[in-house]
Amino acid sequence: MHLKISSKLFSLSSKKDIYLNGENLYSMEPANIVGDYCLKLIELKSGFVKALIVREINFLRDSFNIRLLSEGNFPILFCRNVRWKHNYNCVYNGNKYRIEEIKKKYVIIRNDIIIAKWIKVEYISFVEEDNFEILDSCNEIEFIISMCLIIYQKEIIKRNY
Image (cartoon, rainbow, N blue to C red):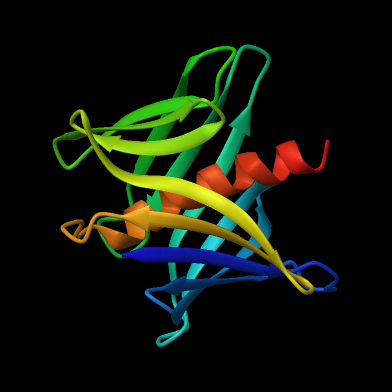
């Protein structure tokens, strides 16, 4: 599967369009919930928020909470496991997931198997696109998209500095 997160470079809205295999199925909007910065993953067909991704920063580390709103509404905590790299890990549905930065590229690993990877950023006229490749066998697609949004958020922070 091909996942593309697309944003207009000069836009008053910070909404991002999310395409899965060329079809615009989701959007992402930043928001503040109780003072915490978060990203909302919205399914376009229903208009429902499917996931919230909250970045938590304290003195010693940063982490992300993913809250899938359609599956029990419990938080999934991604903690940074290497201080000088953007590597995060968690356990979800009995599987161990990791986001790792390897040679300035990101991969998503489930139980020691790479299931997704960040490919590149493309600039097409006034549009910026982050592209990901996801294994076709992944059935927890909103969770995988949420992890891709964490990578996207980390890359945006890098690009702005």
